[in-house]
Amino acid sequence: MRTAQDALRLHRWDVTPAEARALQLEWSGRVERRDRIGRIRRVAGTDVAFDPPGRPTWRSGEAVAGVVVFLYPGGEELERATARVPVTFPYVPGLLSFREIPALLDAFGRLRQAPDLIFCDGQGYAHPRRFGLASHLGVLLDAPTIGCAKSRLIGEHVEPGQRAGAWAPLVDAGERIGAALRTRATARPIYVSTGHRVSLERAIALTMEMCDGRRIPVPTRVADRCVAQAKREGSMAEERSGRSR
Image 1 (cartoon, rainbow, N blue to C red):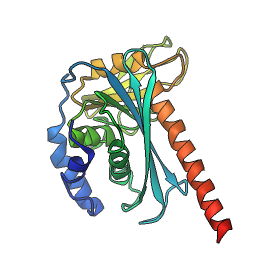
Image 2 (cartoon, rainbow, N blue to C red):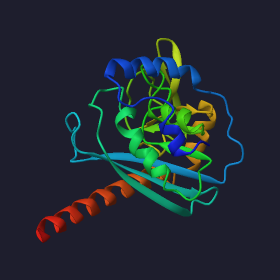
Image 3 (tube, rainbow, N blue to C red):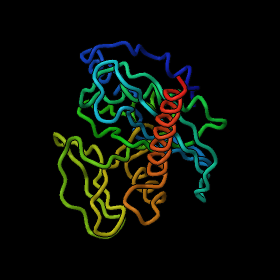
Image 4 (cartoon, helix red, strand yellow):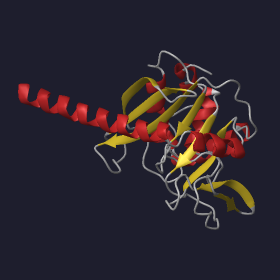
């Protein structure tokens, strides 16, 4: 796994949306969709939110990233790291990785131990240019990643069976790009796709392993809570600073 500092230097970040799309098309060829994982001892979940919430305008607000690392198997939390980074890229559907990854790499740089597998709250291969956030992050870090999105970005699928673990292929332009996975019986499916160095079948199996009876897998669910806490603490610190002036 590359260091976060090395990953951040692999391509420019001061790009236009058109340049970002071109980079996605170029780098999508680097995505490995076969298993190259090795022994898994630690898994991480990631999430990013924005402060202020919603869709900050160009170069406004901060991206708040969280990475939580768990023992595998077992699920014991080992450590967590957060980072707040100014937003430098506009909100453009399909280009969210350019807003979120700089903050994620900052958070990864604060970890004491690198994870062997990363679950991302977002798309991987299930993306218009086959290079969503999970794939982008995985290629940059040269690490196995899985995209676990709560909603569908592109593609069509039939309704999977109602039991936990049932899934249906997510298909776009005749290509299987991911899966609609029922992680809990009768709950709405989530959308799983290869990020990097993980096959779709293995990604589905690993996602189910990390579920505890709830719809969202433990790593990304806990990362979401971690980010929410970091946002609250940042707002409280800013409020205290304002009162002291």
